[in-house]
Image (cartoon, rainbow, N blue to C red; front, side, top):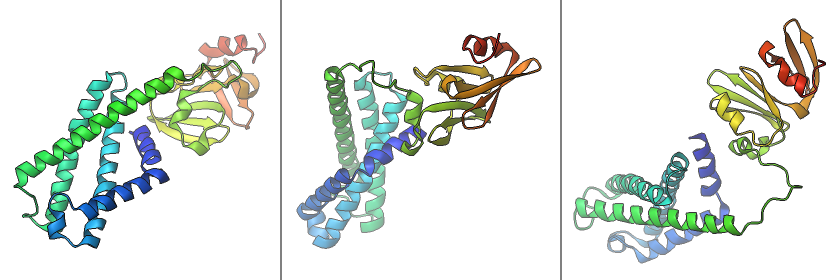
Length: 259
């Protein structure tokens, strides 16, 4: 859900997208579909349709992003259909409620059932078509993109979960309640996930789990010292990470602790 909200914000508040939505809303306001040309003055009508475009785009984008994130391993056709059903139902309920609030109960052309079905079908087909087209375009871009060279930095999927201003070199991961505290050279962020899942997303980062609650990047370890039957790693930023007895062989193999 956190990833969905971050992706939604990035797409929804894109300046080009906001301008396009305003233009689409203005065109709809001038043309006056669904009977609004005969019942609403032009200026309120334009404002109404701009609001409808912005709000339904936001609802639809959230539903599509949520579906794609939760069903990322499923076929594109299934993602498109389910996203279409979710958005069709949500948007039709929203529009009926909005029109009832703004124009009253008699504002739906050809009766409420026909109106709801029409809005549902519009939401369904626009979402399904958009999801399918976006998937095809992404697949083609991925197919023609060059293979990463050995000089390019390795990708760390876990960093994609962080805000842009927190994405630096991965330093350490620590468990705090149900959250993972992700420390990078650019800052610290708390993410709701399991430590084991976070470790799987460290990509090619050279490091290891040194304690049931801690993972460290070896390149950011400044020194190591023994304390009884365990060890303590001092990171380059001055923080300390405990190493359990069972994990001492790991840091010895990494050359961080004398044999």
